[in-house]
Length: 430
Ligand code: 4AD
Ligand code: MG
Image (cartoon, rainbow, N blue to C red; front, side, top):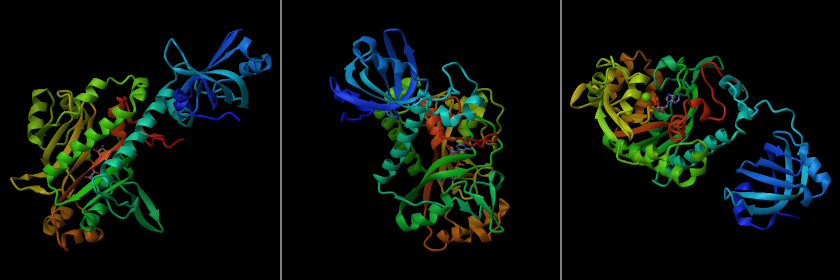
């Protein structure tokens, strides 16, 4: 029996007989020779059938392979002298299934058509490259926090309260009681940080955003670290180290995928510099000078973020925001009571916010006032307020949106390609 190997391992088997199993991506045939680009999930490789070197029945059988047909081959591994790639010179071929005409052909298709066929689209080389980089980021996110003594504390998805404002809640009927899909695990991490010191959660998060932008999904993945005794400065440092680590991991392991995506590596390397920092007030001044009509006291729009980040080669941390448009739980700035100690990390190349976070209020009275000001009911937050009743302590954390990080690192025009099955304002299928 010939050993079945992965395409990604072909370089270890030069001049040996191996077997590959996979699907037809592309098939080019002439009377004397056939070239099939096979994909097996681990990569893409050319398999070659030469008429004079195999029996005629096998050569003819191969001709019946259509795009996405499933097949197995045996052959000798060789390195193509022209492109240095590893390929297989076929001696035997077995058909596993002849595919019906595949809806996604090499011609151009519209985005809506591709999204309707998302379950088939991710067989494409580009989607394969993106989702492998997503996978690397997921692994690197866990490694980063696990290696630094953080404990993973999962937060629930079904929740009775709002974490990030009531306007973007998805409601569900919980046995006759109203419940919501979680917007953030943060409120659940704060009690846990008193028990474990450094914690993180990483899971799906939901926002009923009616926004149809290239940055918004209704279901996205967020990683949220939370650290006891940390202040704003500490989480700005942590966020920078974290983002640097993620970029380094992708650069170390995924150059071939970045090549598929034609990603220019230079801007990514520039992001390994220390991040630029500025206060919200400085950012508003700069935006005005650049022609934005933003007024002090209002949140940045997507265009403002784009404009601001285009001024720098590396990510930008904006900190100390007006209380008005930030979440109720933020610690007030001791030097200016109009401000809270929040921070956002904005990615360069026009991408904008990838991280939001900051220091959490540790005074119970301040939080009670904030809950009232935001028009939130007090009782459902009573357990959250317990963190301030029993040994209250300074703490801080942040949330990174995985899909926005993937979009930036892969330099994609839209977050819809960064998650296997995107959920958006107008999309719940497939
Ligand atoms: O800034 P946000 O709303 O912050 C929080 O939820 C905090 N509770 C996090 C914390 O401090 N623990 O969201 C954090 C990040 C954003 O910076 C963005 O990357 C991502 O989550 N995000 C979205 N990603 C895709 N689609 C959406 N609709 C998103 N909303 C937020
Ligand atoms: Mg935010």
